[in-house]
Length: 304
Ligand SMILES: *[C@@H]1O[C@H](CO)[C@@H](O)[C@H](O)[C@H]1NC(C)=O
Ligand SMILES: [Zn+2]
Image 1 (tube, rainbow, N blue to C red):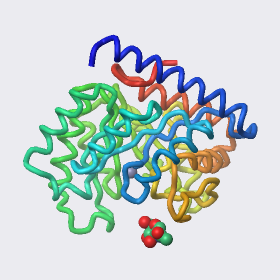
Image 2 (image 1 turned 60 degrees about the horizontal axis):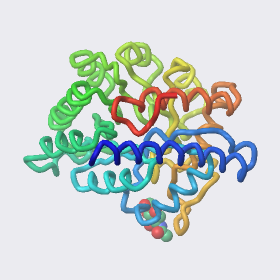
Image 3 (image 1 turned 45 degrees about the horizontal axis):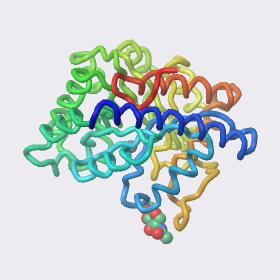
Image 4 (image 1 turned 90 degrees about the vertical axis):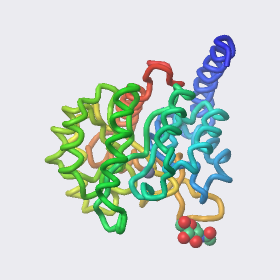
């Protein structure tokens, strides 16, 4: 792409983002007139990919200015790229998720590296470690090898990395200490770790992203977790189409069990209540944090 064309697209994206904020303020009730950022989801998931254009429009109309869409296997990276090429509000993330490490091709890592070279606006994700029953049967040493390569790559190319970690925080900390620190940021997505791991992870450059996955926890436990996180490291996400919040505001047409990015509003309401903070204040803080981590060099997001 020529420099000129690239510049035009960037200007177009910025004016579109401004327009969507203005129209969300005029068209929606006052509570919707906030800027929000869905820091982690999967619009390319086969359960919702056909409806993605509609879900992106709904999100933009509700003030969700940016949506970080995370690939999970080599097979869906092209869908994430196409979505990013088409929609200014989609921030592409490419990664191999720990549940799928065994299906990788011999050339997976070179394909991934080429994708990042060709897409300067892309972040790394979803990558991670999982020792929970959800990852039953997936060899953990394979997970570690695939995770380390991708985390190292994120550090080298100075992009944030979106990390899934279930029941593997000691291993995660050890690896992050070996490879880190991470000045470009690491996002602990759908964070439900213990409050005790937060300070060390913060020191290494982590942000902590909350979703509907926090809602099945006892409220006291959830409160301890969110209150352990420094305010300048809090993010909000939906993990759509999973993690439908308990108080969804938006439903995916045809399937009321599925989640969508506009429901980051529901996550905002819950996390703000745990923090005993107004949702306007948490919207402002979490949006600013997300813009900080996602406005790396080459990103679609202008630094505010
Ligand atoms: C809705 O989505 C869930 C989760 O993917 C699935 O199990 C269910 O069969 C779907 N229902 C309909 C009516 O498509
Ligand atoms: Zn995810």
